[in-house]
Structure formats: C-alpha cells, structure tokens
Amino acid sequence: MARFLDELPLSLALIMALTLGLAPFTPEPHIWEKLKMLAAGDLRRGIDIFDLCLHGAPWLLLLAKLGRMAVTARRG
Image 1 (tube, rainbow, N blue to C red):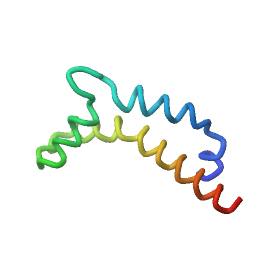
Image 2: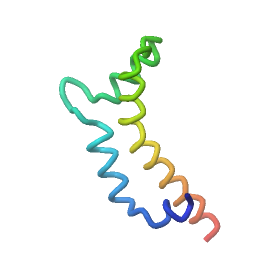
Image 3: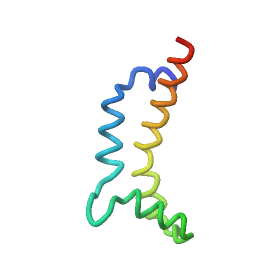
C-alpha cells in the first residue's frame, strides 16, 4: 500500500477528491449530505451507506497520500 501511495501523483488524488468526492455539486455535495445524515443518526439505508463510502473513498485516499508524504519527508 505504501508503494501505491508513493507512486500515486498528488494531482490525481486531488482531482479524484474534488470530482468524485464532491459530485453531484448541487444542491449540495453528496459527501456533505451523508456526513450530516451520519451526525444526525439518519444514515440507515444501504444506498446511503454505499454513497458515503463511494464519495468518501477519494478523500481518504487523499489523506493517506498526504500522510505518507509527511512521513517520508520527515525521514528524508
């Protein structure tokens, strides 16, 4: 996994987070809607959980990439 994160371009991870992670953009991004549902305790349907995973995955990948960059820079 570390090798994958090292070889993944930061620009690609950022583009994925900003497109798939935020789509659809109107009336509000899906990830924001699902996070609000999760905070309110309304995230019960399977499709809503799937949506949260689908739209959250690019953000988690971006965070993992940034974390890996920080770790390797510190060792540097």
